[in-house]
Length: 189
Image (cartoon, rainbow, N blue to C red; front, side):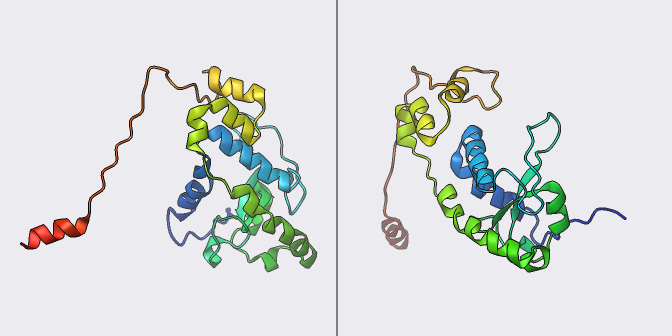
């Protein structure tokens, strides 16, 4: 018997929602940091079976993944309050099942406070002013370790290398405001 696949009602919707959820962090290193915080909420374990996250192996997917509590096919979205840490095996078993059909009543009771806490993990707005002022200080203020920040800014071989701004480059912002109603009035006359 072959592997079952999730019903994809709207092709591309899953990837769009992933970009919306994780894109707020702007840099992969910040995204990974917040993913680790999310998995920490679940004790770095699968909520269903308790499988522990393992160190990433080259070429192998991570053990834990972010799953929709209410599946997309049932109207769920990849948004805070609808996210569960599951191992790949449990995620494959759950697929498009309603949570009440997959979890026990006790598991649902234990999951409710974890769903409620998610808003704080994803209430993040990238602060471009702080970033432009001092990238290193901004990354440390988010909670990234000083040694990781050093590597991100100075080690070009680091997978998530960001680098320092080129001191020779200057940014100029130009904004143009105009009233479209004036343009429409001119076209009529």
